[in-house]
View 1 (cartoon, rainbow, N blue to C red):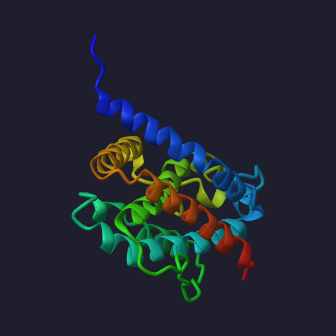
View 2: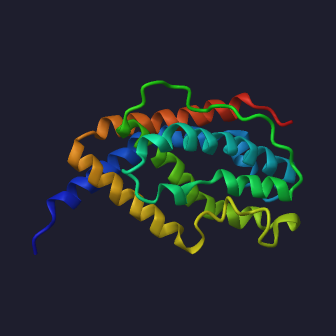
Length: 201
């Protein structure tokens, strides 16, 4: 049976991407604000604080990164999350403060931007896991207040696979693995710094 060399190349690239961002990913998950939403006794104020911070992340992504990827990521418009977060915060009567730009960098290349989007889309996949914990809170036990963590619903897995396929094809065509990985590490580190710098309001 013959193997497809392109798929082999893609799997090597995706493994490298995952391995080389593992430490940054772990550092982000170790922050108190990240751990708070996985706590069995998660408090609503911690949940709102997390959503508030993620609103900044997604707003920056949609304003800074999305324009660079128009025409490259076909379903980009369907991947916007700020309306979902705003819906959840409104349900919880939380007043969002002025947003901050999380990705303060100039002259971002397309591969670098794809690396950032890799982290953002990965967080949506992880959100489905977090959803199980936050839904245990009585205030969030219905379908309201959890739109963001619900991600793409039952299509979350297929959205992630579609994105990885597109990312692999782009890397294979443009030979830009290093730049994509740099963008992903930058995204993790930028979110880490943002999470660490903001106190609960």
